[in-house]
Image (cartoon, rainbow, N blue to C red; front, side):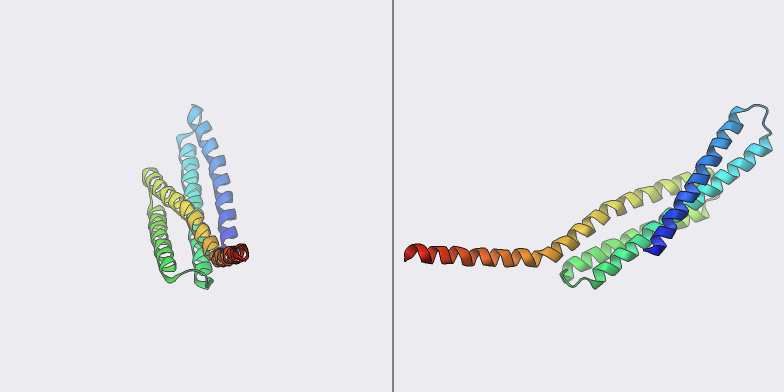
Length: 167
């Protein structure tokens, strides 16, 4: 949990720095009296901050997937087939996010960073949808036994009522 929080706070800080520098760059572009080398330096800062923000976001998503995997591994209520399918899905998501993270890391131009960031965002949206599914599966597995017991008790009650009606 601490690793996820650290990555998210790093993401928030990097994103804040990026937005600040992006605004300065837009002012620099709009100001005709600005020196082009100053604008290039500001653009380079914006590039580095956006890259750092994307890397922090990817790390946070991967640590969240690791946390979910640990929960799944420690949960005794899940059936083997459900556990296998969820584990496979988590491994696929981690591989996709890791691949997109390495693309972000190796990006050297703004265009490359934008395309790698778009891919990372797409994979993270898939992961966000999967987080909801994982929590539903875990809740279902946890309470499924209670529902089975409730069904058994309901059938017993129906038999008892039938016996009492026949008397």
